Length: 235
Image (cartoon, rainbow, N blue to C red; front, top):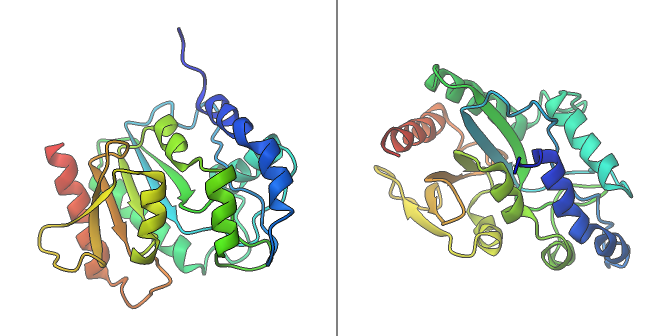
């Protein structure tokens, strides 16, 4: 039996949670919840990919507040796949680092066709600001816990969590058996950790969030790229 397209699988996933999420998010106390960030790529996005790479941030800022799954999927597709980026895209520390890692990995695997995925460990942020609240985290965990299932649908070969060590609890919520390990030559687990989980690829790493700009030296970025290459070469 032919597998459904990835967008169809994602749509089916989101539809399990969507009606209840719409009802519950309006009742959240405190700052207003943004729309849930969903993923969508189009039928051909992964067609020729030999490696799929997820680069994961923390949460969105002011993500669109749509009532339908299709509108929400269209927003992600337009923003990321069709590159209709927002005004501050070029100066954003997250997207600067995303582009730098994408470029370095593309050079590091010249014989591979790489497909990149933008993801966030928290799918619901604030509608009018950046950051996270306990209420929004609780809302997502009860009514939109989709990160694991998204990962199982996409089946990435490399997963980079640019979430910082303070969000390790969010990673462990979605990937229950996740363990954090020191990488060769790196003594500080907060600085760089390899993550093992039965639901993640071997080449899964957690690094600082790019807003911690003093950490993101060339040496730090090059250490990450080298560690990924070394891990992929023996996997």
